[in-house]
Length: 194
Image (cartoon, rainbow, N blue to C red; front, side, top):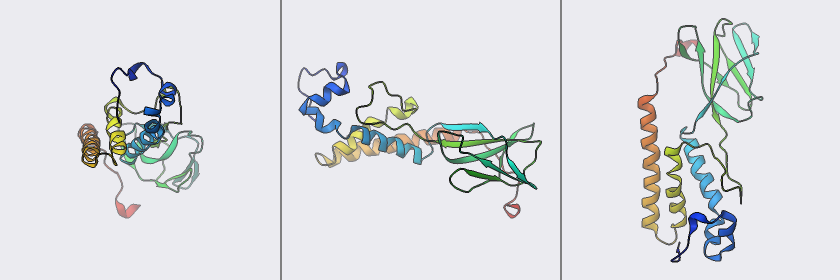
């Protein structure tokens, strides 16, 4: 993308840039490129998780069923944990897709917590310049490299590849840092019991 001398992009709004034919072509796909970068981050479970205490189950014997339809930003189950009063431990579950969560070995004395994948905030065409997408700053700073990798695909394949490699390496580094810092949980059930 060519930037003319004297252009002051930092003071222009997105709507103003769309009026300039020099930038309009590139901006036409900007939101989609940003959304694809965010979806890539989500596919690696790098975006912040939601957390909710599960309440009001339908209990049959030692099996509890929860309706997750009240969680507006729910996009998928990550993990279920049980609080025994002393510690949280990973707990067995079965997600039946949609909004039904089945928790075997249910005990009324334990508190069950659902960690879930949140639906990411995706950009709409000509959204407000100050739209928040809910991506941590360490990941948000990688999005321009993803955009560059898509925009330069036809103009300079080597430059596009370097930008995509930088984006992917940044994601892997972020993921590795999170894995080192994350607490470890152990299941209290054997596979045969599930």
